[in-house]
Length: 102
Image (cartoon, rainbow, N blue to C red):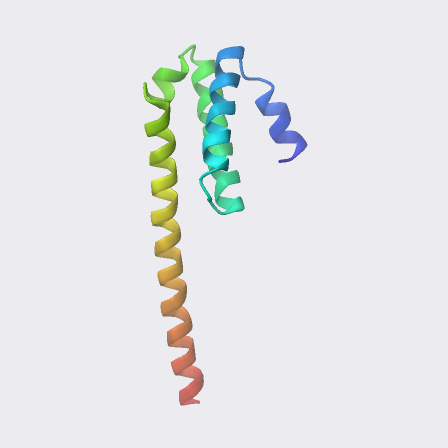
């Protein structure tokens, strides 16, 4: 990740840093595409920072069950990627038909 990300991460309090590290690890071993992983982890960082500004604990921000939170991120990422792949295949198929007709 970049320097800006590191500076933002350093703003987390001790409790949120520990939770963030656990989320980072869980998402990193989930076989998400690197770009999807980075987008998700940045979103989680922003969520924790916003909650911290409102004096909320991480449990108020992401819920009681850390594993469930991570699984929801992973599951929604795979659904999005599957939809994107399907859309891309349809686009390529239609493009092939158009080229063939020319």
